[in-house]
Amino acid sequence: MADTMIGVERLEAHYGLGLALQDLTFSVGKECVAIMGRNGVGKTTLARALMGLTPPRASGSVTLLGQQVLGWSPQRIAHLGVGYVPQGRRLFPSLSVDEHLQLNTRKGPTGQRWTTSRVFELFPSLGRRRRAYGDQISGGERSMLAIGRALVTNPGCLILDEPTEGLAPAVVEDVAASLKELSREGVAVLLIEQNVKAAMLAADRAYFMSEGQIVHETADGESMSDEATLGRYLGVSV
Amino acid sequence: MHTFYFLTLNGLTMAALLFIMASGLTLAFGLMRVVNLAHGAFYLLGGYVGVQVIRDTGSLTLGLLAGGAIALLVGLLMERFLLQRVRGLDLSEALLTIAVGLIIADALLVVYGGQPVSLPLPRELRAPVDLGVMMYPYFRVLIMVFAVLLGIALWLVMTYTRLGAAIRAGVDDRETAMSQGINVPLLFGGVFAVASFLAGVAGVVGTSYMSLTQGLDVRVLMLSLVVIIIGGMGSLKGAAVGALITGMVSSFATGYLPQFALFFLFLPMTLILVFRPQGLFGRAA
Image 1 (cartoon, rainbow over the protein chains, first blue to last red):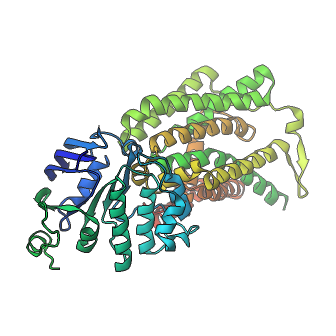
Image 2 (cartoon, chains in turn yellow, brown):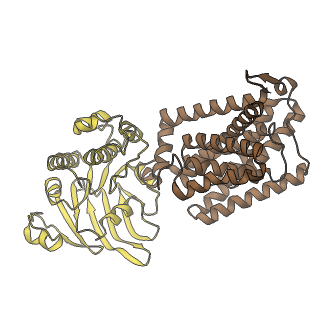
Image 3 (cartoon, rainbow over the protein chains, first blue to last red):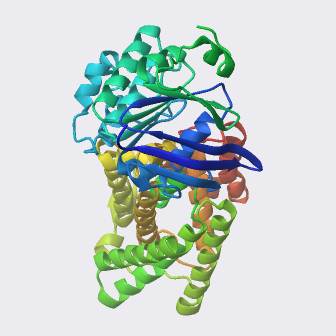
């Protein structure tokens, strides 16, 4: 991992009086890295802090694509070349599928490889609903559109907050494969996931979070599917 | 029957004025959840300055442009130098716009005095035209046509352009729009400026229907807010429907039951607030 695309050092973030993120340090190069953990351990707060969406009380250092972005507005971070798939999709009910993609299509750090038609190649069922509005499509299509809308910005790094939530297993595999493919093309992919299968398929390595901290990092050669690890940090068995 | 037609046409005129006032205001409101309580003062400002320019130059077109331009300028300055400093603080934003509105209204009283002012229209625009059912002042017909054209223009922009799509996205979900790279604060500044311009223009054309006088700013503001609340904030369609309801109720209540006019005007708003707080065409937050 030569260049750091996402660098987080000693990041702390607060909600009200509570500390939501404590002393987080990790980095992502041109690879796909998963952040895993149970509900409520601060994964979404982390994604929001990276995008400039957490209320101002965040401290530490966040470097995205070589820029120190802590304190930047979300739209400035987005235009730097950071794609974001928010938790719960957050599509626009007043925009059609086509409009979601057209509005975001731009030349990004990785050129112009992703276009509306390439998104429809990746997600054919989405291509059949081009005129439907954001609140008229199925749960799976919503995920696809949320991912597609981030892809057409041709991002240099991509932050996805539980993108496979509610997707059929076959679609999860497709999404995971395309995320892996993206990272091979030189995009830094930060995949925040509870879905162990998706993370295992897509990610090169993983960090495990608990109570606002990173408590474990998969070592070289350590499998993400290591049963003891998963059991300890996620409470699941594979 | 004659009275009925007359009240209907007056209601449509009022609806047209209210739509010109409320269309921009509701979009700005939807984008940043800031309601400009100086909007009525912008109407009054545009009206006085526009009438002054018409008197001085004899040109209605110049008067309309001047009325719009002065409101646009004040709106831009207010947004850039005052509102941006208190962004996100709801109470401060509301109080700030009230303060600006009061200052403008008082300044106008100093400059133009307390005598009611009417619009000096050329005779050919003042003359009534035959609408089939009755004669009605030509200029009021023009106001209705202008409101309809404005509505169509705004609808086309909102529906078919990238700018319109960005505004809709911002109204739907400001935070997500920003995280996808849409500069919502900049959009808001633009929409706010357009809304201010329209308020100024409404002040000029509206003076043919209601004389400019002290307190008119508050009355016009209240009616515009009723329109937005009935229609739903951020909804252009809502502004049109809300303006029609409010204009008609205002005209018929004043015509038939003047002692209950305010009751009938605020009743629909009250019912909407209780049973459908997002308005007829707004989305629940």
